[in-house]
Image 1 (cartoon, rainbow, N blue to C red):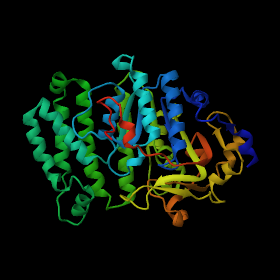
Image 2: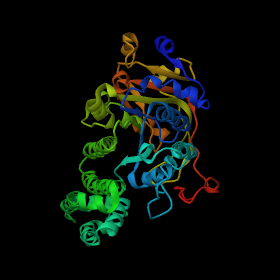
Image 3: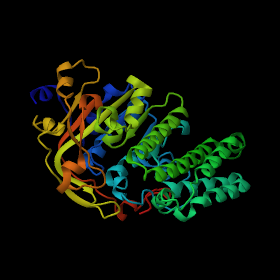
Image 4: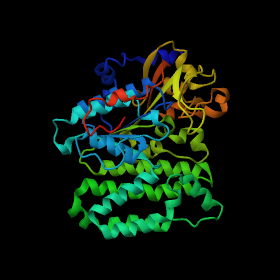
Length: 429
């Protein structure tokens, strides 16, 4: 489209991080900047988000990086970047499928930048790295029990009894949901809610014993256990209910993080399907909402939703869940898609921003419902139309859009990345 080409702002090479990041200074007045991705395995998306986030942290006072990842794994990264004691337990973070989503060179470089940025800063001014997701049932149970063993051994015994309701299914919680759905198992939700409430009821006692950071972590993990039980129980009732529970949990976690610090400002890294306003997509039209929609309602103009897209190249993805990562070729965008409009500009990398620019002609062009591509950790190019495209109104879904004409797959970490790193290094390769 000629209009998109005229309005598109060419971006500097990502390798020039300072110049690339400076193009996003216009969004620094926000409280929450949500940075998307149209795949979970594209290097340019990670490196672009890193450059933008470095700028927002370093120049504009952003304090939180909140990512679509499990809380306990991200807690190990957070301890590393804030120079805090790394939690006990396994030495590896993000060791379960899909490992490449966070255990890649792009995240490795950003995590080490955060550690250096925080090095000389007072503890209460250091930038945080946090996980928003709900999948860590087993790890979160372990974290709660480890905390209670330290501050209240008697309460730890009670917690073990309550969490015992889930013990046969902790390592494969989908089986728990199936057992409840088929009447083979009574739900554990009441016991898990009581456990969360018990920790909250002893707030003052626990804060005196072990400080605010450890207590906050324990509460968050107890919330995850309760939410995860609900998630796996209702996933057999319908995709909409489980999707909404997951995104509500991510939003409430973000709110809890923002509430803990004065003048807190957050950058969120998640898929476009979470970051964009679901109300402007087929997801929303069938009853689903997401963190982007909830942020827009809660923070209005102080939330900025930025989508990312590509036409072709390679991507790290699997054929199916729990299968090995492959580097797959991404097919060129369909002619009836939003992506084709950006591809037809013939610009290799650019930013389109319609948040406050009064660009009525541009928003009109991007307001027609079209197909939009979404590639997660599974990519099936042979069924791409049905597996990976959905309808959306781009101008209402996002406030801005970052386009890369051709992209390449992320690079998974190898053992070489762990050599010479401090003992607190969280990836444990």
